[in-house]
Amino acid sequence: MNADHPFPHSPTELVIDLDALADNWRLLRDRAAAGGAFATAVVKADGYGLGIAPVARALHQAGCRSFFTAHLDEAIRLRAILPDAGVEISAMNGLTPGDEEAYREHRLAPTLNDLGQIERWRAFCRTEETAHAANLHVDTGMCRLGLPWQEVDRLAEEPERLDGVALSYLMSHLVNADDPAAPINRRQRQDFAAICARLPTPMRGRMLANSSGCFLGRDWLFDCVRPGVAIYGGAPNEDGPNPMKPVISLRAKILQIRDVDAPQTVGYGAAHRVERPTRVATVAVGYADGYLRSIGAGPVPTQAVAHVGRQEVPVIGRVSMDLTTLDVTDAPDAAVGAPVEMIGPLNPIDRLAEAAGTIGYEILTSLGARYRRRYVGRAAEGAAEGAA
Ligand SMILES: *Cc1c(COP(=O)(O)O)cnc(C)c1O
Image (cartoon, rainbow, N blue to C red; front, side):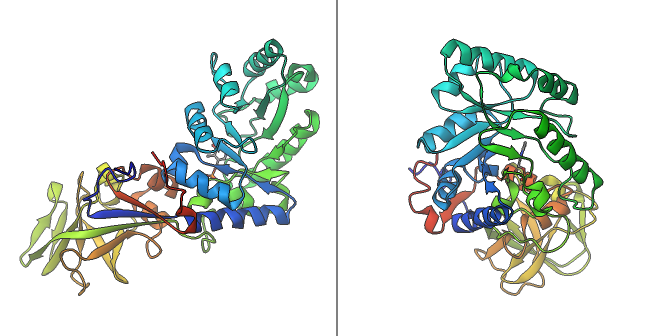
């Protein structure tokens, strides 16, 4: 059985458009190229929930040759998917003691996040008498991973700490790039440029921009960019139209329709009161599938919706583990077995995220395993093979 279809009878289908994904990466690549930079791709968390194998193959076909994961294990898995010597794979979360050999064996670059990691990689390179590639991450405001400024100072004063290491990328990460007006964007760019001037020149390049950073302007592009969410269709900016193509559609078939004529409540907690004659449709999408419970729990500033044809239908009541209820009173096409677009061009991930009080990233990375997943697009030919 195809490993992508462990639930072949599921009435809910998750369609992943690999051509849209490839187009999104090319758009980012072209934006970067207009500023003299090249584009890599972040494929952590199973390709933002969409399946690392088909995603990575589609991006490789589109021309991407440098990939970033969070974990070493993700990078090892990716190396098996893209074994070509011309493909660079980096893990960003840092060098854990004892992992050195695994990086070498699978031809992966660790991202060195403090002086201790630099020292350990350097010692490893010395033992092997080979300058193995590694990236260096400097912190310019995230206070998460990367060398803090005190360690950057030490390294700038003692650059021999990097002797014998092949420095591949020199990187930092933006804190608030989705808000172009945030003053911290400019400060981080200046600090990063100043740090780059004090440290050895990396072989592959200096990189700061995530998806949103690609839209801040030329000055944020440096030598290369490191986008993630925008490849998968997420909006890179808080306001304005989303320039990215939608990549996923979640299509559920209506399981049952209930006509409610008297005042009654729908779902757990009697949380939704029906005040008029209402048709309630139930679909097989629940919080166990990553359709977050917060989408339907209690008062929310924005109403979550789905679509029957082009007709918008509100989500009503609480989202249960396996089921969600919709008010289809105004959708004449709603019938048992009829398709409902839960996520798609009419109802993009960022809109659903807003109704859930979260961000598109979490909608993507929460997408459940119980859907029937179908990869479409020219890039899907062969790309979904062995997508386990
Ligand atoms: C996740 C991540 C990215 C990609 O960010 P997006 O906002 O998804 O484009 C880039 N760099 C680092 C360090 C990350 O953790």
